[in-house]
Amino acid sequence: MRSDDSRTPTKTPIPREIWILVVSALLIALGFGLVAPVLPQYAQSFNVGVAAASAIVTVFAVTRLAFAPATGPLMARFGERWTYVAGLFVVALSSFGCAFAQGYWDLIIWRALGGLGSVTFTVASMGLMVRLAPPEARGRTSGLYGSAFLLGNICGPILGSLLAGFGFRVPFLIYGVMLLIATTFVAVFLRGAGGREAADDVRPRVLLADVVRDPIYRSLLVTGFANGWTNFGVRISLIPLMAAAVPTLGVAMSGMALTVYALANAIAQQFTGRFVDAVGRRPVLMVGLTVSGLANLVFGWSTTPLFYLGLSAVAGLGASMIMPAMQAQMADLVGADRNGGSALSTYSMAGDLGSIGGTLVAGIIAEVLGFGWAFMVTGAVLLLAIIPWVVIGRRTPA
Image (cartoon, rainbow, N blue to C red; front, top):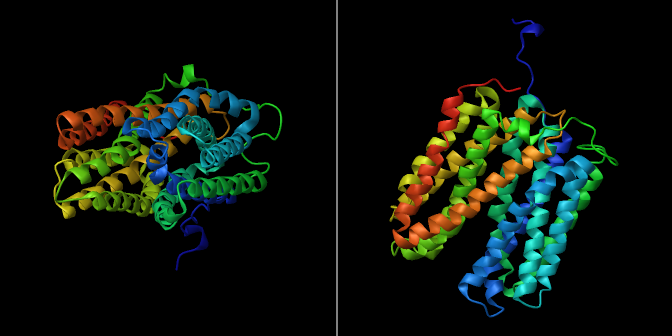
């Protein structure tokens, strides 16, 4: 019989504060899933063309990118919690504004304001995860947080379809209410966590000029760009268009592909987050980039539903390794005892820039050469992101 001293150590529990952030993420994603499918149609209801309707999506991403540099100083001044709460409140205000928009330009302005609030609470949430997650469970907590967003994005459109008969404005009202609930939830239950309640955050600051010299940080920027290009740009913008253009697939198949991708991603993250903690950030990240990259190389040539959905699941599996590994590696780099606002906001910008670039460049390639080549370029972007990690070699997390 083994003695008590020889027992395997118990698994590190997830802190209560992390669960609060997870519940908040689920509410945010549910609401976003309600409004995202109706945005272009809502814009077109103001008698504008396809290009103008598409701009309602682009303006959100552009505003996120433009305002990202300001989030670092905000976090340094007010701390992560209040920056997070302020960002959520701004997005709630934006959602109510969209619900009562009287014209196309009203809608554009309110969506731009939503992008400002979105990047604010996104960067602040990363700061809170860095500060509150136990170092030995950073992969697991990142996977849990990411799964909450994915689950909300899956269920949101389903709930939205049930509300279709009530018009375009109702989803924005519901989204605004959900955001106010999430704002109150975080403000009350994260009191005293993730930042000072008043006055400047006195922790040492991670200077961007210093951290950008670190090859791991530069590799994270490259990977963030590639992930944004693929999973927040090309996949969302081109999959519906491809399904509609291929006679053997059809429009309905696009929704199934996005759902299969999200389900595979969410389920796998329950395991890949643990792998990140057990095996290390770099190897899991490199495997994820490889799997997702290879799936995208051939995705654009798939013409049968089985192949189309199967590759979506494989791409989701690859993505489930990328996000927890990136988030955990960023947390290792910044550390819980330092304010990393500038480093985190620049990292967020890399993802937004990739999302915008992927949407535009891959869209042009698809129009000129076809969807097969557009997804091949996307797969190549992911595979090229492996190179910096190969060059720097293995590095023990801080």
